[in-house]
Image (cartoon, rainbow, N blue to C red; front, top):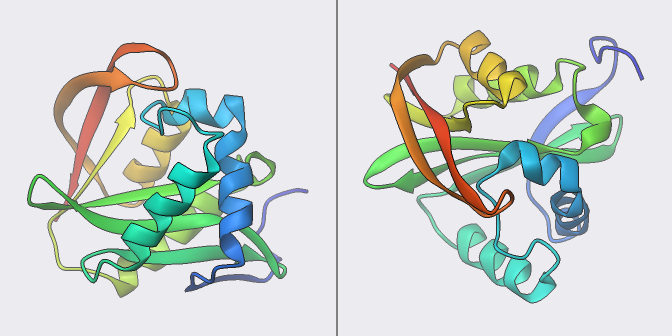
Length: 162
């Protein structure tokens, strides 16, 4: 699959049926390494289902499914962390490098405020950092934390969008 410019793309409300794809995406070891700050055990379906049940029932969380040509590709969301609105996204690896993350995040940002919004990415996750910067986020600093997917503390970049 080449760039997704000519394909039908949409952001829509998350359905229970989407969760199976989100779970499969979460099982990808390469994606876990890149995301770094992941579930302790990505294969724990009960923990996955409990997490998604909790966030889908939280009015402060806004989640949209990213769909390409009728296929669920991943999700983008806004949630509260330490009293600040943060953005997150996760796409299946088959959709990486095709401009979909930038498109999905840009569309999401047009629809959901208020500002400021924050985001974080593992410092070595160059692709995710690039997506955030293309969508207008600027670096505000660096932090570190324990990354479950890597089993060690790593550095992350902290971003802000006004």
